[in-house]
Amino acid sequence: MSIQDFPDQMRDRFPVSLSRKHRRSLIAWLGLVPALAILIAYRLIPLLWNFLLSFQNMRYTGETSWVGLENYFQLMEDPVFLDALFNTFLFLGSVPIAVTIALGLALLLNERFPGSNVFRSMFFLPYITMMVAIAVTWAYMFKSQGGVINYALQQMGLINQNISWLSDSWWARLSVIIVHVWKTTGFYLIIILAGLQNIPQEIYEVARIDGASTRQRFMYVTLPLLKPTLGVCALVGLVTSFELFDLVQVLTSGGPARSTEILITWIYKQAFEFGNFGYSAVLAIILFVIMAGGSLLGMYIQSNDYV
Image (cartoon, rainbow, N blue to C red; front, side, top):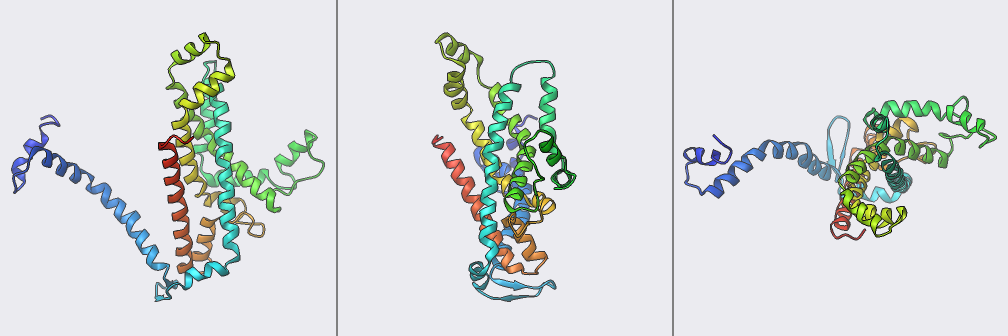
């Protein structure tokens, strides 16, 4: 029995006579039931519960009491919230940096040379490595005394004294960005490489015949044809940049002086360190709205070819 005949074979199992089109639609929806059930159980219901929790005060014992908009008013009195919001958007800066580096590497690795596949694997390896292991390793490298990075910079004559990477506010922020760029560049590299290999070589041949230089071929052929690929990288990067919990928690724990605190780490601390589950639900809603809005904006810009 072929897949095309399957709806006809199911005809006798339905109590009501259905057209072929309706039988196909019904079978398609039945096939989607498991996925929809998982989506509802692990996405929609928790989202609705989180919204209700934002109007309540819940203790560790699970007891709740209705407080209305009190948790939302707490935002105005929270001095850390604006810092966490600022840092959340600041770390978004790692996305264009990583994508730019990945684009340059992809252009190099798109050429065939001995060992090119080995280099591709090497650049992709950090992405599949656990973030906790990466954060612990980089924490040792960023140490002010005895750290590999300070030692290397001193040997190259770039610095005269050790940099307090994880104990100075702006250096700590830069450290988080460096690690995140290092980890995600390989992922963007693979995506961009796939996009480059889908560009027909005939277009480049025509451009060469017309006298286009290497820079002109890159600006007027490669980049325009890579717009969908770069758009995918931007959307993925937007989501991953909002999910830096493990990196920040292990590398800096939000310090020094909350200078690397982001919304997701502040949500965790409000809930599981301070027991303020209602207020953490409010922060989670704000994070969800920002992520959803950013994703929709990115999709709209990409679909309307504004970039």
